[in-house]
Length: 157
Image 1 (cartoon, rainbow, N blue to C red):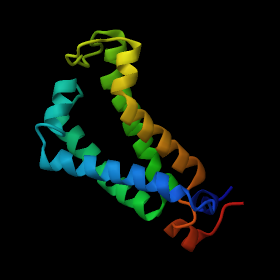
Image 2: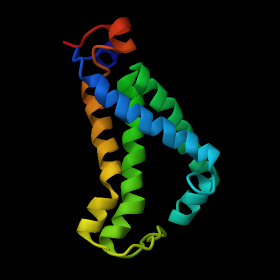
Image 3: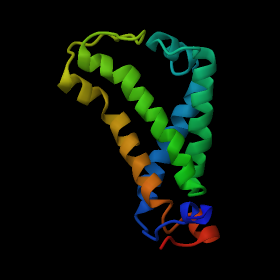
C-alpha cells in the first residue's frame, strides 16, 4: 500500500460536521494554551503533574493549533488526527483516570471534585471522549467531500 492510499478520503458530505467540531475545539484550546499559560498551558500541566510542563504545555498547544487548522481545511486529515488522538488519550489518562480511582497516581494529581468514581469520571471526560472519537473517525475516514485531501489525492477506494 502506498502513501497516496492514506492521503485519499471518502466522499461523504457530512464529514465536514465532524471536521468542524474537532478542528474548532482543538484550534481554540491550542490558542488558549498560549494566551492563558497559567490556566490552560504550562501552569495547568504543572498542576496535573505532567513532566516538563513548560515544554509540554506549549508543544501540545502548538500541535492543537496546527492539527486543528489542518483538520478544518481537510488537508492531511488522517495525519493531523493522529497527534490529536494521542493528546486525548494522554489527557484521559492523566486527568480522568485519577477521578475514576479517587486518588492521584504516578505523580498525576487528583483535582478536587464533589464526587469521584465512574459517573464523575464519565461526566468530566465528556468533551475528551467526543474529541477522541471524532479524531478516530477522521483518522479512519479522512477529510470527506469538502476537503483539500479530496481535491488533491482523490477518493479512497
